[in-house]
Length: 459
View: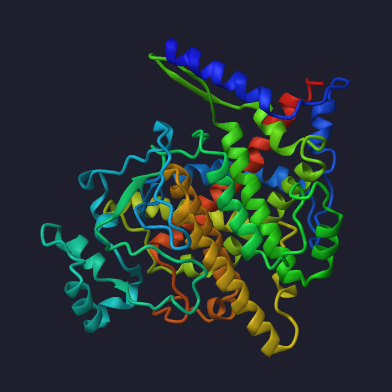
């Protein structure tokens, strides 16, 4: 009880430091957060209400089921990489910041040994078998069937089309993490260290001139939004994607907040006050609703990527390999169901507006966007909270994979129904990150419905 009392006193003291939440008539709290989060989204033909209905009642339940499967719950990550941008070895000492890696014997054989991309044509390429053996990819203690599957992962150089700085999964510091046992939630990591991360992302990687101040930095956002409206659609979309990702993370932290911490149990649940501090129109000086709309924009981009990548997963030779044949077939069917659902969405984002001008200038801009996003993925290694670092790395890799898909449309269209797919490939890491990252966005949209219902009764 002493620990619980100390926590409550700390939360009470922290509340005194936060801006006072405005009060009004019943339902006014909901209006302040959501009154502008309705109707059509900028640069899109879609509206918020269509996304809510589609996500919450069709896609979210099936996607959630998919992410609980063995193939998607294990993610290999190196949480010990040093920050490449500043000398700061400080780490969050709060116990909820810790990540518990999986003992190797708990990870299915097929996942633990398959370090290469899976495709059915690799058997015919002897040099790939030699490369796999050279890198020690095949554990001789595994069954012949498992060894055969490992050798079917093809080599492919992602350096030219990747939007993320990927971890070296063969590094001794890379470990498997069970995402279900290390959920994204509030850890207590905040303040100057957390602000430094986001400030570096926004100020140095979102194409913004230094003389254009972000909202809340200067207290007014008129100049910022005048600048944002005047830039090309690609740079505007880039900012909105980062803002949407930031909003989604803040929703997760508000929805899974530590409400009670005693010697006998911990209780996690929605913290409405925390949500209001981040999204209330008055408290955020008009920024909160904009952030939520950017979340919906991010949803559309990642949903579009899922609809576009369907041919890659539909091939008969593609497997979500874990070593359990019947389970793998069942999960692939569920995966295809989710992808067909994504494709059925009636108001998809039209990515053809991106990089549609002069070919030389468009290619230059695309490369600039890719490098900026790759830089953001590197910043995730500077996050001091290991659990926040885990989910930050996964979600940036997932968004980076979505962008890779959208900008590889011509290669995906050329994928044959059977046989090699040399032009376009995804690693298992990219696949797991892609679906789990979208799962986080989908969860955020679903959580907004809960917060709406709670705020509806408040002043």
